[in-house]
Length: 224
Image 1 (cartoon, rainbow, N blue to C red):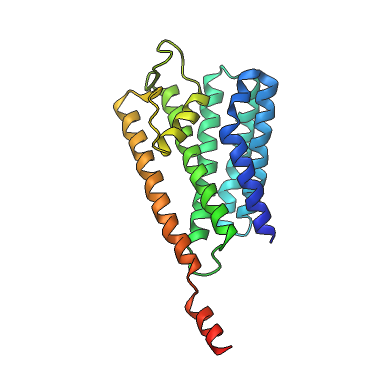
Image 2: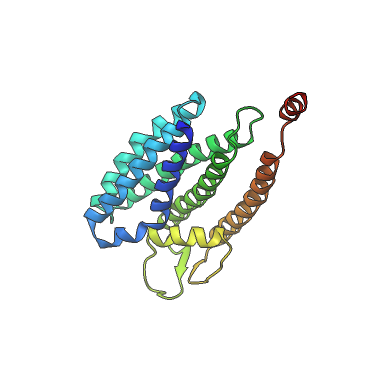
């Protein structure tokens, strides 16, 4: 029961983070409030992985690094080092959580079922988009011009726009307003689209498999 609540709150934090980023355009205090959502994601993410020590340790190690860079970005968004550090630590943290949830979903014993399985799958899907958004943001910082906004060709692409681009790419919507320009950016974007599609197909198979009674459960029902 506790794990279900942790997953539910973690999912809520992810939804607010991945789709509430426009508030960061309203100034440093709004950005600070947005960073508090990251703090909530960190707390519930650690609660989700607390029973698995091999995944908990990396999450605990990267958490203070990410929070430090997050506070720095909140009050100095123009600082390249701060943004790059935040994106790198955020990407690693989300990758650790994603790995933990995927292993939990597909393990042979004690895997989540029902609503827990659905919540875990949605969390992983959102985390995939978050990891790629971090990669896109870091790529644009290290190699400016890797992406372009066709509606405002001369404008600088912020990490918020690349977060939007990540989920548009993962959902294969292809609006065409933000586009990858460099060869590596195009390669990474196509890899994300493929990853999202394969994950959905795999999860559908897992969800269907979760509805089929296990042999020991079927035997128990027959004996009863």
